Length: 45
Image (cartoon, rainbow, N blue to C red; front, side):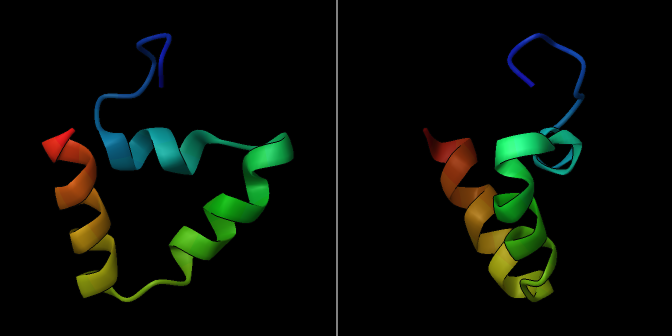
């Protein structure tokens, strides 16, 4: 996460709760290929 608690982007996504819990649940429902594509995109930023 932005405060340094997460050691990876995926860990940061999975640590979210509250208002972001819906996004977290949608991420968890993705296929491995879809998650990989999102992580590849985020790492390119």
